Image (cartoon, rainbow, N blue to C red):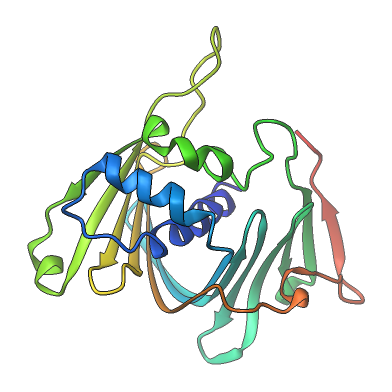
Length: 236
């Protein structure tokens, strides 16, 4: 489930950073101001991705396609490297339900998308709260000489402690998230996410990013295939 939430984090950040269109000589305050103005004008994005996962020293690689539409629609397809027409894992969020389908074992995991005050956004800390991103995250520019020579800058987000008065701070989904962004068009080309507690690092590279293009309604709809087992995860 944590990996699924990570993808929701990445979906929002890709949307956020693809639309900023700013020079990174700007201050964090100016970045946030520009984001607030431009985020409202952006409705969706699509991209191809390559994913590398490091878990306790073990490396795994995968690739696929991702589509996201505000406020809470998502489609993620992992593709068979030997036959890219075959989907090995599919996740669809239709605004109310999360569907995770594994064709090989003919199984679908079904879970209700949280709709309470804390979960009404696509994920904790994003969605409406992006308007307060400077309060929720520490933002810094990271020096990367090799990246800068290629016209790319690295932005780092570190979650601040959060929680209601009298309650323990909410556990963040990541310790550090770094994003590589092209100066030329402000398109994100790579993400690195670190979860130190679970010794996990995710590196995601994007290409063929498309912003505000028309997406078919069927993109975010899921119909359970015949003969497939459906497992419903109880609401928390």
